[in-house]
Length: 333
Length: 294
Image (cartoon, rainbow over all chains, first blue to last red; front, side, top):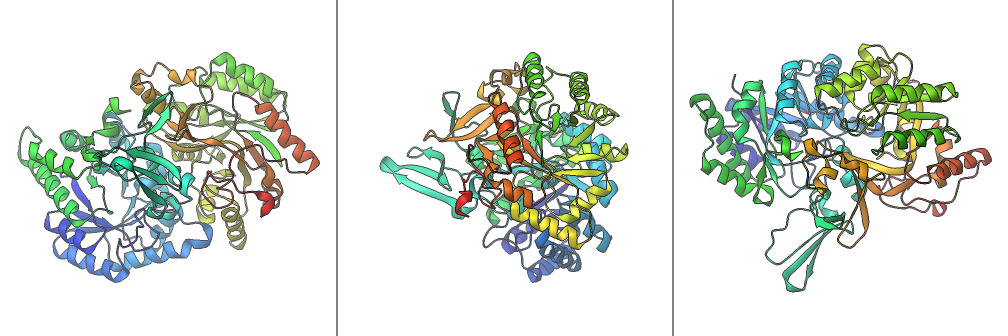
């Protein structure tokens, strides 16, 4: 079975790029706090969503709507209305993390498939059984914590199809369980759809072209002249621990699983997700093109060989211009 | 309100763990949460050892709860979890949905640990139907969210479960597949040499300006700052919190427990000893908001 290529779009232009370059499905979010990339200027109005569905369907491509934040008791209506909007727009699936929303979608729109978001933090067959039995999910996106061998075993025992992250900025914490951003800024991916919100980021220029970056006054990193500076998420800063200064949690880097494609296919993974709804159309075009070519090659050629130009293209758009096999590769742990 | 001692977050030698709980049995603690919640490689105490300790404390008239691992990765983790759920005597704190599902399948009532992401009354009701009897509020939720949760549950005529809030200790902020302690030692997780044993209170992470910031504890990242909701005691009482959770540290946990116990018996909130209370007041977790000025 061919693995589905699921690409991100934060804008009309990014959607067009993904469609043009051969995405099988595109996931996007509404322009509100119901999704984990609730950045200013990003995402789709209800009208734009309906138009996106039409455009995609005309090209044989699917649209998934990400509704992957956690509403609190006083604010459920916005999330439920967003589910209504998406289902009525004819999206092909809803990507949901939170159980009351999964329940709402299952009861009101049983014909619209539900995918468990990576933010749902399900890492075992038992947790997947929970979501399948309770809410009839059709697919689950695994958090980026399991090794390849563990992914293979989950695929064997999962009651639903498994989607994994294939490429993009790497969250190293269990998704849906990370409070690092809210600890510093009060705003979190879970509740506000943002990690390290831009209005809390302060760059300071220092003598000698050095730069410092703070998140709500906390020093996340300092860069020498010419050193490439990445966006200050708490997990990718340089800190002092045990007398040494280093990336105590993780370097700025992107996940890239191109070389794992044959094993992921063999494991029965049904879909590959590309991260990056916050990235521009050029990124989406480039990454979708590479992954389309790679997946097509996987179908046709034996043995599968990763072309150097693919790796070069992906590394160019990667965070910190470097990539890793991340948690799939045991020594990373 | 009662006092609970949350699960030990760090990795100590077996004798140290047993000494700690032997001493703790003499403190005014009502509920003990026991078990390894952070890393399955920490096997100084196996499940049978935790069960034996649970028996000892239960014999002394204490409520004991067995806490499950927060991140399930390997099949062996699931097997251990199944034994824990099937212990037939002690309550279970479910710290991920694998545990919830196993409890549900075995019809074992459970306490929802702080990592289950229960942010609203509808999710709470769903899990109550699966066997939830007590809710430990997630660390990032504060008074306002709790008030809304209770009010909406009331409006929906839902019974509210027992309620527990972390009132003292470093805040568990994140979990990863990666072991950060091994990383700090330049070791792979599979070859970690159990280096967490060297850090009985975790490994401090400071910013480049030497501001204490985080605390590395194996695959878990904690706040360096200690959450303290002592001065918020009246508000906790008003919100009908049943259990005040204190997280064990190597030093002075007895003093903390006694301070809260005394505050409960005299109905007088203690002065602030810890560093932060921001989450409780709806702000950044690391913030310290002066309760007296509110």
